[in-house]
Length: 137
Length: 123
Image (cartoon, rainbow over all chains, first blue to last red; front, side, top):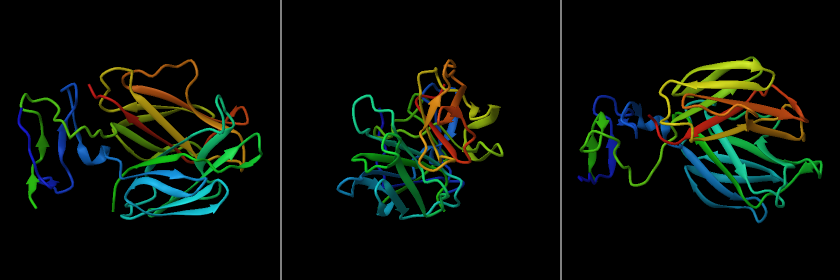
């Protein structure tokens, strides 16, 4: 087995394009496209980021309403965002984490909420996790 | 600091190189389920509108099997409504296609923002 040790990995022909071979060996795909460009693990109750990558700040807009701002911006607002959370109780189906209604993601930030159907309001969650996939600027 | 420049990385046997246990998403989509169309995507050959709040994504390069992870998130169309984003009930993912639903207040709903990502092994 050989190991390459380097600090930077750059495409030779195009700096932003490094191709890797699939696990099954039947295909290749662009490494950069698959990497999460930002992720965050947020405690919405005490409010604070436990861990993150490429996040410059998190803002508490009110109960169950948070804005996450990226350090390095995305090239547009068309990226994919996925959000998870911990429910209020075992077998809880009332919580829904989502992009806040009436807002759109921007290249530099995204506003997420956690709605609780039983309460009929937003709820602070102690674990809100998100990942961003797409193209950095 | 050293910089390695290469166009393709493989293991010495020609297979997938280990990236210090890191894993990349193998596909992702940002779908407008209302006007229906992909805003942007990766490794996605096509998307199909199966009905209200019911959509399928077909991957360009298939996964090695159907045991991969699908994550889905949306923006609700109504404020403070009960909603869910699911793998379509009764339709198991295949190596190349997965079908997802966005539901609000018990009914399929076309979400303007419906994002998804796929993690697992490519074929």
